[in-house]
Image (cartoon, rainbow, N blue to C red; front, side, top):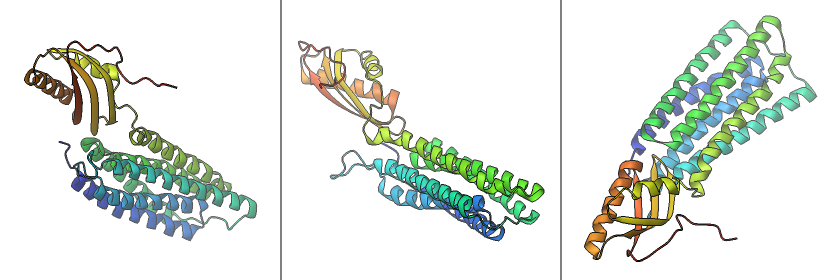
Length: 300
């Protein structure tokens, strides 16, 4: 049975939500004080961090690993949907950043005015971002939560954004290079969209039921079990390390149901040891049956 880690995920999301709100507020205040487009864009990026935390809390309450009559395979895909929501937020942030930069280039704007105290505030913001990213990623990897790992990756992109913006503001403060503010808005957008793409790429296979484990790997494990003659029509889906579903047709050396049942139980135990947590569905066939079709072939 899959462990229910939702209370841990909920705790982490609440902590990071509060910290992300603090980060967003500091960036927005300093961006307004200084008139920095890149910093205000960064504040928008940080807003998506907070929105992602809220989204994660909502999906966390829905993503139970326990099956029910309406969802016999559990509810864990809600987490993947939440991760895709994060990717959507990143796309919106990217568009907003580019739009603001182009408008500044075409129409101009007030020069950025900066002081040392505002730079120190941004260093504090950077420290908070680093803590949040590593904290979320560590807990996410420990419990196998895609929503925490995806959100940590988003926050990690926020760290690089903040570093870039901070470097540009230092250039403006020391040398009055006003053009840096607009120029740096575009790399910010690229970092945001790259982060969104990586989140999308990590979660789409789970949602479209891409094979979780190579059929050849499952075949090698199953054929080591005494009493197994052959297995074929092997299929798997889910997320390895989180929850995997495996089904197969199994030819067993058994003349009675009890012996066949013992062999299938041994197969399930071997697969559980190798790919836990896993749910296995086996269709048993007699020794006389023959098939060379290891998995499903496309018929176009």
